[in-house]
Length: 145
Image (spheres, rainbow, N blue to C red):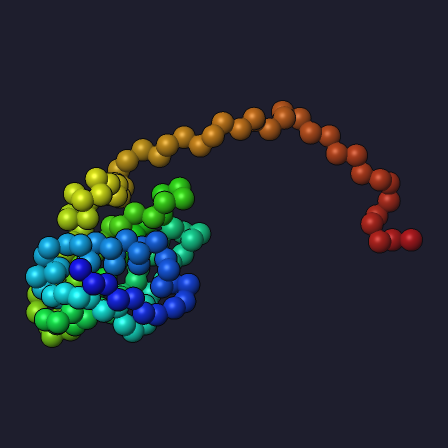
């Protein structure tokens, strides 16, 4: 298998982009759709918010059979990014190919699903505030002479 990489920039080297490219390159179903070798040309677009831990990127890819856009979305848990969506959308309008389950089976990692009814884990225990606080202020009005 030959894999050609092109492009630059911070988002190009994001962990979600690396995971997506790796899965597309080794996945039998993506190889059947795109053909081999794959060429990663064009600009990776999208966003990755390190504060909120949410990312979504679009990665152009070309194979001998067709050109497509790889869509990857993910969530950051601690220091690790997990993929919540991975699919290939052919530029010719053919049906998209979802690789999310394939990646989970191959890697053995399933990104937890959001559950709005789940109970929130307790925050770390902090000491309660003191019952009484005394603040001594100097006499007089501030700024008055």
